[in-house]
Image (tube, rainbow, N blue to C red; front, side, top):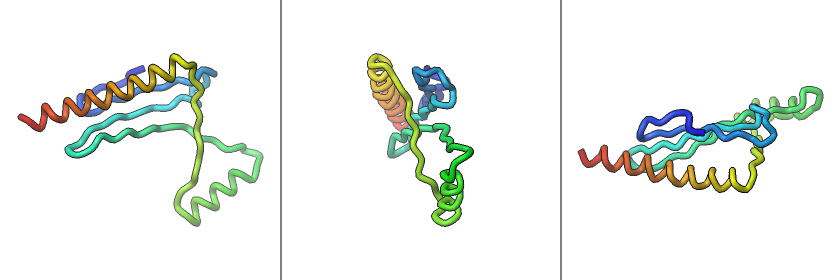
Length: 103
């Protein structure tokens, strides 16, 4: 679902088939003068009761970052729509950028 469109930047919300909003993610496709950037925002969690949470805290303190993983479950049709939407958005923002540059 497209949530925003600013010409050189488009934002989509991708829902998980399980229906949990924490499993969905936001995809931003943006164009600048040289590149097209695709950024995916997700919500990641750890088990409250496990040592995993402390491990992540310790790793963050020592390394400055934490490796996480996020999964969104899609039907075949959703996956096809996702890929086509990503392709279209990249083409759209690139065309917008070219038009803006030629002015």
